[in-house]
Image 1: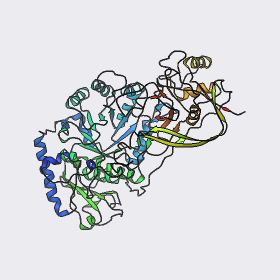
Image 2: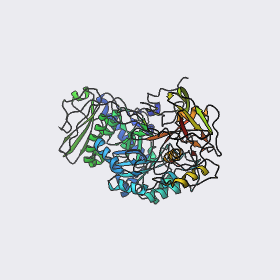
Image 3: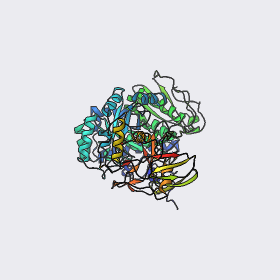
Image 4: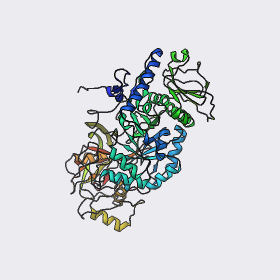
Length: 624
C-alpha cells in the first residue's frame, strides 16, 4: 500500500500561511507565518493590522457577541480539559459515584488548575444499541449534580454535540434536544464535534435557551463567524519556525482559541504558540480511552503559563500587543522570541525558547521566571511585579507510559453444563480482526505523533495476533444465558446489583438472550452456576469450532476481558449483534460477526453499560 501522505508531517491545510498577496486571501489562514528576518517584521505587523481592518469592514464585524455578560468568561478560559465521563479520576467504579474533587486536585497539582471541562459522553460507545447522543447525557444519574459541583469549583462546563448521530433512535430535532439539554444542565458551552461552526439559526436558538452560551468548533473557524463564536479549537495548527500569529485571535482578541494536537507527545510548539498569542490549550490526556498523557515538562509549562495568564488577563485582552517584539540580539540568536503587551505603564514580555539549550542571557525588563528553559517559556515585565507561587520548570520530557492490566477472573467451582464446547488445554495462537478506531486495542495509542489520522489510517480493517496457553481445558456454554435462566437465578438468590440503574430494563421473551445486564451481573450469574465468563480468547477458540450457537436476536457477548490503566476501563466484546446503527462511520460497528472479530468497548458506569444488544454465556474450567 502506498500512502498519499506522511501522517507524521503536517498536511498542507495545517501549515501556516505566508503573509502576501491580496488581503482577502489571508482570511483562510490558521496561523500567519512569521518572517525570519527581524528587519521584515515591522512591515509584516502592518500588513496584519491592515488585513484585520479590511476583514472587519468586509464582514461587517460588530463584536456584539463578545459584549454578552454571560459569555465574558470565555475570553480568559486558558485551560480546558476534555474528559470522558467515566475517566477513573472523575468516576469511581468501586463506589459508583462521580469524584470531581479527585479529578480537579490532579489538575491543580500538575497543570495549575482548569478553567473549563468538556464532559464527553457518547462516542466511542454510541451505536452499540439504539440509544442516541441525548440518552447518553439524559440517562446518567447525578449528572446535573456533577455539573453543579464543577460550577462550585469555579469551572465552566461544555457539553458535546455530535451532528453525525443520525442512525440511532430519533426523538425531537437535534436543536430542540440540545437547547433543552443546555438549559436543564445549566451548561456554559457546547463543543461542536466534527464542525468548524454552527449555522446562525443554531446560534440564535441556543442563545435563547441559555443566554451567554459559548460555542466552540473543532477546527479553523471561518473569519466571518468569529462574530458569533466566542471560542474555537486550534487543532492540528502547525506553526512557522519563527513563531507566527493565530488569525482568529488576532482578528478579535476576546476570541479564545485552544491549541490541541491530540496524538502528539511533545506539546512544546503548541504551548509556545499559545503563550505568544495570549490564548489557551486543550489538556486532553485520555483520547477516547487511549492514554496520551502529558510529560512532566509540558505539564509544568502549562502550570507556569496559565498562572501568569490569569494574573495578566486584563493586559492580554486589552493591552497593545506586539507580536515578535524586539529582543536583545543574544536572545534571538539563542532561539528566543517574544510578544510584548503594554498598558498603563506596564509591559509584559511572553518569551519562548525554540532551542534545546536553556537561555539565561539578557532580557528586557525584570525576569519573572528565571530564564527561558529549552523548549519552554519565560516572562519578564516592566512596571509590574506579580505575587507568584513557585513555578519551577521541569525538564523531563519523557512520555509517561501507562499499561492496561487485566482484572483477574474469578475461578470456577462447579461442573460444566452438558451443552458446552470444550477448548483443550495447551498453547494457542489466534488472529483477531478489528476495525481501527481511535480507541486502539489493548495497549498503547493507535496513532503517535500523527497529525489528523485519515483513511486508510482510520477505520480500516486490521488484524492482531494473540498467543497464550490454557492451564486447563475450558468448557464454554454452547448457548447464551436466556431471560428465563437469569430470572431463575434472581429468584433463587435475591440478586440485586449495587447500582440497579437499567438492570433488566426491558425483559424479552423467556427463550431470548438476557440483556440489560452488565459485567458484574453476568459474573454473578456465572458464579452461581459455579462458572465464570469466558475470556475473549476462550470465546474465540470455542467459536472457531463452529459449535457455538447464537440466540435470537443475536447479541454481543460479554467476555472476561476487563482491563484498566487507572484512567479508562474497557472490555472486549465478541459475536456481533443483529442491531446496526446506520449513517455514520463513528458508530460502533453492528451486525453479526465471525468468531475472530472483536470490538473494544469502553465501560461506562452507573448502569449505562447495560445494553439491549449485549448478553453473555458462561464457561467452566475442566480439571479432570
